[in-house]
Image 1: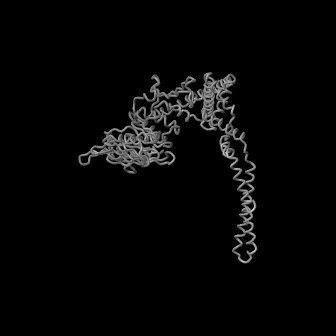
Image 2 (image 1 turned 120 degrees about the horizontal axis):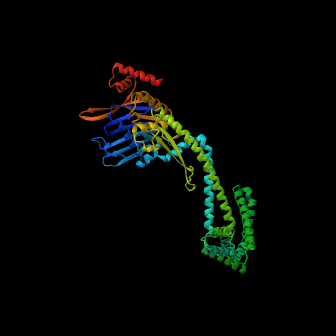
Image 3 (image 1 turned 45 degrees about the vertical axis):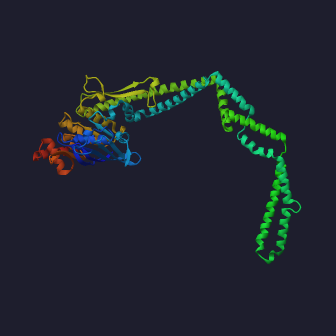
Length: 542
């Protein structure tokens, strides 16, 4: 939602601050005063193409700043765009430099401008399906959910069948080569981590004699006659007899006790290690041969033993599939066909539900334009059922809203509506019916009052006020009957300062607003015009 707009050096506007309300904001002024400049500024800030002619005469650049609320996770966005006479754009979002495309991506969907053909989401048929689905959610929700579930299941079944066929279609040479590789791996039957385990054992087998000799000498030094244990015991006993004479010896005696225990345990562990050593040439040869075989597998199918085992698993699965290919293929085909039948059934149910919802929406749209002095106009919503191959996740249909300007006229796409005022009133009717079903938060209407007046103008004003209950609405109008419904009112005025023409934008309240409505009614602000203005305000509030 647009909370604030600051315009500087755009066309005839040297500087203007605008704070649209959350309801209906109108902009009034004489023809040629510069009201369209406001729309051009809005287009620039939401990332539309900039024209250098928009830069004010004598200025180096045009600059637009805007503050938006209710956008994204942060809730508030500060945006700027500067258009230089050099043709360069400088855009920011929350003080971070961005591209014009990023401005359009973030802010474009939040504002719909009506009255021109260059930025109207509702004119694009690609948006009509989503609008119908959101408007008719209570009628379509279950059927749409069922269709989307069936669509996903069909996709999964189809992918599985395709993958299975690709596996089966592998050449006989590839299958045979895989079988040979699997046989080679299974002949050696490697176990996870086996190469590391044997690698740790190998040094002990290679040097069993040296290890045994060293351990024997170490045990003798620790436990034999005159060994370390004997000398530690003697030192401990001698000190134990005199420890009562000097307390400082207590800690030393305790330390000697602990050392003796540790030395004894070390000697026992050494004897256990010696007992486990195998001075066995046959065992050594067996280990070396096994490691050589594992290294051979790693070189051919590795580089690691884990990679060899993964390859074994893949080949086992592959060959199992090929050996049972007929059964697997038959079952996968059956599941795919069943999923297709379920998708077709749910697609038909969704298509029928959409067709009914489309008829109801078309009737509401017709009632909407009738109330805007377009009693001859009508709508139809085409629900063209697509071929099965064109189904997508959103449904089996192509939806388009078509407009009929008169009973005997041909239905035509919304984008083909020629008149600016006519298209604005159609958009107003659409927005009024669709309510919150679209993504735009701010709606901007231009030329909506073209060619109408009197009671019809009052109807449009009341409809805009009603629409402003669900959207922020900005309207450029020449009709007092529309302007009196505004929650916020700005007047756009062109004046001459020092032989230079400029446009100013002023917020009106109280007497100033009454004066402007009187001017719009009668071209002057006399007592009779003011009384008529007050009467319009009274009727608008009723």
